[in-house]
Amino acid sequence: MDTYDYLVLGGGSIGMAIAFKLASKLKNSKIAIIDYHIGSAASSAAGAMLGCFGEVTRYTFSDQAHRDKFDLMYAAHNAWPDWIKELEHISGEKIWHNPGTNIILNTQGGQLDEENFEAIISALKQYNEPFQEISPKNIEGLDAASFAKPLRAIRIEEGAVDSNQYLKVLQTACEKKNIQFINRKVDKIVKNNDLFTIKGNFDDIVSKNIILATGAFSNELLKNSNLGVDIMPIFSGVGFAMVTETKGSAFKHTTRVANRSGSCGLHIIPYGNDREYIGATNVIHTTPQHQMIPGMNIFLSHCAIEQLKGDIFWSNIKEYKVGNRPLSLDTFPLIGKTSLNGFFVATGTYRDGFHCSPIIAQDIANEIMGEKKIISDVFKPERKPIQTFTQEESIEDYALQSLSGAYEFWLKLPGIVSEKDMLNMYRQKAKDIYQQLQTDKTLNTDILFCLSMPTLPKNAMTELKNYLRK
Ligand SMILES: Cc1cc2nc3c(=O)[nH]c(=O)nc-3n(C[C@H](O)[C@H](O)[C@H](O)COP(=O)(O)OP(=O)(O)OC[C@H]3O[C@@H](n4cnc5c(N)ncnc54)[C@H](O)[C@@H]3O)c2cc1C
Image (cartoon, rainbow, N blue to C red):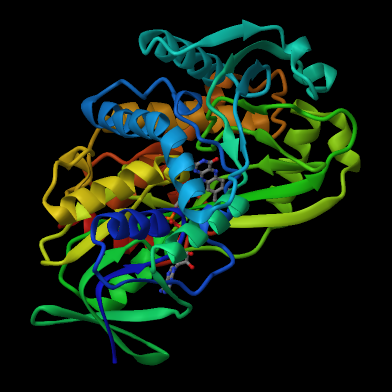
């Protein structure tokens, strides 16, 4: 039976970063990562944008929990340059990094796009971050259809890495720190006295400390393990993306729209060597999904061809990516120790966990060492869901976001149906969900999207209703 001091379950961008930071502090400890390389992990499907200001929306500073979340993103924004240097130094390998992002405002996303675009500019000013308002005509590579022409654009300094190349370097850096990689699927975690036993189709593995970083796959593992920790449901923000061969003029910088109707904002990352990453959709499910579906393929391709570059129509697709973003019920991260001694959680990072990973890792390592925490306690894993809206506000937001999404999905209203009618229809949909759940708790728009999907499993409403009653 193998025994470790620290076992990290999950070897995505977060699990590996945690193991690396721990190994840097605990030189004589035995540390391992268990991961079975599921094809639909979030980290390998991400681009990945190191998005801090680009992720700002009209809600980013609207309440304390959102402000605490931004503090985490901002700390990561400042940490990345040294983090890249450190990983390069330890691994002896270069990390591909493309600095600079163009953010465009076009006509395709409805009224919320404009509000989010303005919110980004206002945050950049508030934090004295350098940026330039530029003419969309000067964005190299951008060639949108005439009906989707960008109206405004800014250039900011944050950029992107190539997720898969970065993950390889991170793995090498971990190996150089003597972290062991165990390629197995964990079925269950059992706690006996002071030790955790990891069970699966292999000999038991034992450790005093467990860090759960299994992303959107954590729900199943927690349910099977029955550890008595009270962690809210974790959903899957399923995203599709593709890597294509560059056709036509090449983009020089990452180019994106603001976050839009539950999605991370259409974006393109020029990987170099004639490869472009185009992402990403976001449809919320109660369980992880593993396959590309035609509807999302068409949607992403259409958006990219119309809003970014017509020549994408002719691009060879080198790779499709499907990934599951870990989304907690209240949509905020779940980070830190639990009531079970030695059991830590680092997930629920949703759309920007790749970017936040160096700080999440540092925070978990600090907490284990009894050092100062960086991330707010508000995000401790066993909390009750954070409430940032009233139900009325959430119904209104759901209606607006749905309409905005429908416009991006080519909605054209006939004269006899007005926007007001559409908004009323969406409001009613959200009200029906609340009525079915019989709850006075508020749900985030993204969760309401999930609950209004035709693909929702039959028992999902009942399970959520029972959870909300607790
Ligand atoms: C399409 C897409 C685009 C995105 N773009 C960005 C972006 O540009 N910038 C950004 O910051 N974020 C982005 N994100 C979000 C980001 O990817 C996630 O927030 C983050 O990567 C989550 O990392 P993780 O390590 O927690 O999860 P994951 O990467 O999902 O890793 C979890 C790991 O756990 C392993 N695992 C799970 N269950 C078990 C088990 N039972 N036994 C063993 N191993 C197990 C899996 O194999 C997996 O490797 C994007 C996500 C998607 C899907």
